[in-house]
Structures are given as C-alpha cells and as structure tokens.
Length: 345
Image (tube, rainbow, N blue to C red; front, side):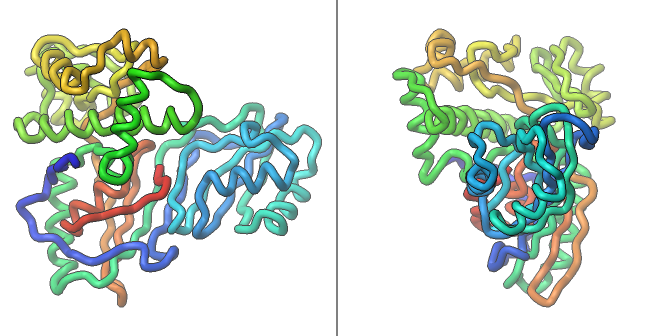
C-alpha cells in the first residue's frame, strides 16, 4: 500500500470517526451549467440517502423503461451519505411533473428540480462538490487543533491524491488493472481496474514529489496546468512560472499513464519513465489496451474550510473541484485511517 504523506503532518490530528450515520456526510454536486428548458433530455436534480449512484441509475432505468446507458450523470457519489446530484433521462415527450411524481413514488428520494436540456449529462459535467462532514468522537481540543490544520491547508494547498479507496482492498484492483494491460479486456469492470492502476501510479508520483520537496513549485520540463481552465502547457522557464505558482494560477500535473498522455520532458520525464518502468508496462502495451491517459493536477487549494463544534464532535464544510476527494481533506484533520467511499466522486 502507498504511504501517502500529509501537508499538515507536523500538526496533531483531531481523531474521531465519520459516517456514523448518513446525515454525517452530506455531498452536493455543483453543476457546470443550468438546463436550457428545452430538448429531449430531462435533467432531474435529486437528493437521497444510503444509495449509490449506480443504484439510482438502475432504478431510474427500470421506472422509465430505459437502457441505463440512456441515463447521464456527472460523477459518482458515496452510498453512506446524503447526496444531491443531477441525472439526465432521455424522455422525448414526458410531462415534467409526471417524471417527478414517478421518481418519488417508484425510485424514492426527493426530486428538487426537473428541467429539459438538449444534451445528455456526461461524466465531468460539474464544477465540483460541496461537503458537510461531521466527525464524531473527536479528541479533546479538536477545534483548536482543527483551526491550526485549516490554516496550514489554506497556506500550502492540498495534494490531489486519489487515495487507497480508489485502488481497491490491499491494492487489488490496481494489480488487476496492471495485469489487464498485458492481456487486454473490455467492459466497465476492466476499465475500473485499469483506472485504479492509473490512480495508484499517480499517487506514487505525487508522494515522491512531496518527499523530494517539489510539491509547492514547478520544474523545468513539467507539464503545468492552469487552475482556471485546466489548460496544459510545458514549463520552460521555471523561475518565471513559479511566480505564477505563487499567485495560485498554475500547478504541476502528474501522469495518468496512457498512449496519448502529454509527455513531460527533462528531469520530470525521467522520473515518470522510471515510475512506469517499475510496472513492466510500455507505451505500446498501453495503446494495445486502448488506455489513452491524461494528466491530473497535483495540487489543489481549499480556502473555504468552515469549522463548527457540534455536540457529536466537529463539523467541517468545504468545497472541492471535480475529481478531488474529501478523503484527503479528512485525513489531514483526523490523522487516522479514513475509508470513505463505495463510489465517492
């Protein structure tokens, strides 16, 4: 298992536990755009507890006689949670009020809004997620400790780890993914395992970067990422670009290995190549497995952390960009093993 470092490792944690009940973990999806009001797809804003995104997709498909592939969603959400997210259903002529009534009676949960839109909702069509998490059974002095941790996170940012929940129990899904690259198979389960393998290598890359002291700067040869629009570019003048790092305009990006991944150069390229070599995997093998790859921001910023002492312990509120995990924020505060998700986004 990968030993993931903490940016607040020198500070004492608050301890505690999470998800004693669904209401202790609230996640709300932040849409990328509003529905236009016309089109063949019905966008349903829905809130539920103790159900995965996949369970909702299958239930919606049954209720409306749809193929599950005709139902869109922007990201996965936890099961042990109160989760709010939007689904799109390809329903050409259905009355919106009838859609809402059928969902609440046949699927369950609460329908918050129903609107029409032109296109299917796709993975990644969100800005991010808002979280309200109650950590109960915290240690004495938890609030004071949490204030120090939050200040450190605001100053230094957060490593954008996937975390162990992504690579499966004891890393088994990641290992299965590596094996599938040598003997390619298709299907959602194979894609899940290969994604777990990519995620585990990204986490190894980021952990090594932190240990080298290169977390808060870019290097010549890095592929940097603009934080406002996600655009990638090659770092040529590290001194100049680190002025933009200090202004929180850009960050380094790490490898999600694949045949079409944008390559780093110089020393960063050598480090990435050495990491891939440990897997006995080559770029032609990735191409044969149809794993295209991409790059992922190595550093994110969480400036809006709100802390509130409650009877159960401590409540934390914060917002994360899409693809980033609440696990990492909670690890920094709790300093204990944190397992969050059956299918956290």
